[in-house]
Image (tube, rainbow, N blue to C red; front, top):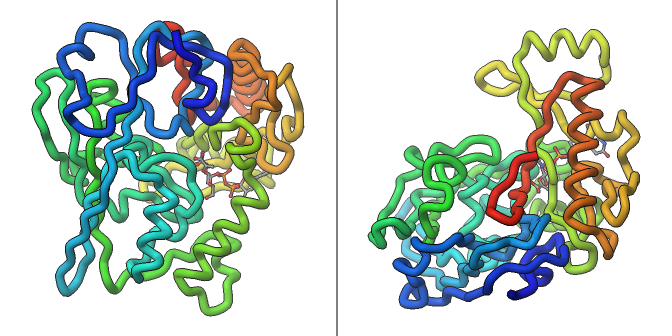
Length: 330
Ligand code: EPU
């Protein structure tokens, strides 16, 4: 058995059968994988091991960045094991703009399409051209174009039909040379004459100020997704909670900030054993140092229960919760 504490940023004490690093495709034991319970990890920044996991863990460390370009676009073919923030910084340094809004998001490039990472008005699918992977059933290489990745809010085909069936090897990005900066998010809209560098610096400043650094305090970023409800339901809720912030989506549904719901319920700073709702951003649960998986599950269930009781809204985890036999639901 091997300890997973250092393999996931929530840093719970949990074990698995073994941890193997996959640095080249030759390291990938496709046939072996098929006959055993297994899980792939990047940097473990969105996965919480709430129990000892009975399977094998493989860390995707396929690296490398290839750059090509034409008159209108820059194309990057990036190995799944590259660090996400390093890629954003690399692009900025080279004058390929657009991804600055996603600076400092923890995790690897291979993980970014799975939940379509997003922050400060931007989701990564805007720049994804295609995703390359290996089918773990056939061992064959394959590629999916953006439209076939079925990207949505913190969602993609890799969380649905293809979950657990593929290993993402490369993500292909397409960055327009005349990209327009995304400054719709409040604190970015306030920037005077925004530049890619000022957006990058501001995003880093906001994140450092508001979000706990997983290198210092165990956490996996937002623990829950922002719930999306129908307009009818929202209108009824708004009568009861006129201050509720909201964001109307293109399809008419309404996204409500889960952080606000938790704030109203006074979860901010509240602790349950070794787990705490972060005092500056309640949507982030942190490990104060001695949290157990049971405490994480119990606290998360309490939050889901209280939000449902007060607002009639069912929160869903944004993180991947792993128990003895793999993915578990709350
Ligand atoms: N709010 C409160 N109280 C708080 C904090 C926030 O009421 O203490 C309300 C405010 O109305 C605020 C709103 O919640 O305007 C939204 O807060 P914030 O801008 O901090 O963003 P979020 O919706 O809570 C999402 C992402 C974050 C991303 C930020 C910034 C999800 C689940 N989370 O959080 O992503 O960094 O937007 O764009 O969509 C992550 O996915 O791990 C993550 C950290």
